[in-house]
Length: 249
Image (cartoon, rainbow, N blue to C red):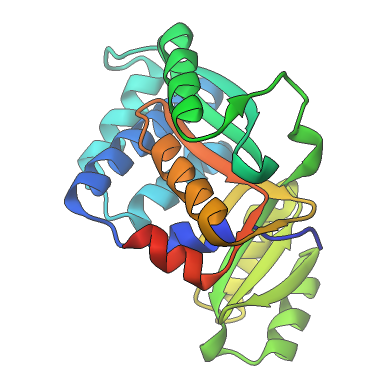
């Protein structure tokens, strides 16, 4: 299976403050709106919308917010038109960055990205400069303390998953994007409770960074994710717990 970025685990473990929750809701609303616009407002026939709704529900977003976002996407309510733009770049220690945005003003977005990157030891790259270091996969997270690894692996593979890894007490089930929803449903049918599920860019290999450089990378990733137009940031960085603790201090 492809290398797994420690940053993915860090994001899942971070405490969600009220301010972060508000920003998270804004990003989720944009994703629901764009998903509904591109594939229709019925989640039964729109896998991207189904995933966006599931993610919003997991974040405890009120149902009325979800419904309004869908209606904006289908044109039943007026709303801003967002464009999907991805950027590639580098952070401290040469780590690769793949940044997905939803924006109504690409010029503003790229200007903000350049500013944050330059202030934090990073830089924008050209299209294709780092994308080859990632692959798009579905990832399903299961609490490893609740299930035996061998039986979980067997169930995942029978469901159509690519592989399973145990990372810091969490089973990470990898799937091809096309099989993502089917694997989730098959695991639920087998009695597994899923902690989280997402489709994203997973690094093919990770770069281990320690000490002050690792702290710089983590602060850059945080700063990028705090930008309103940024939906997701993917990196191939792997950091130690000491750097994580210092970055959170």
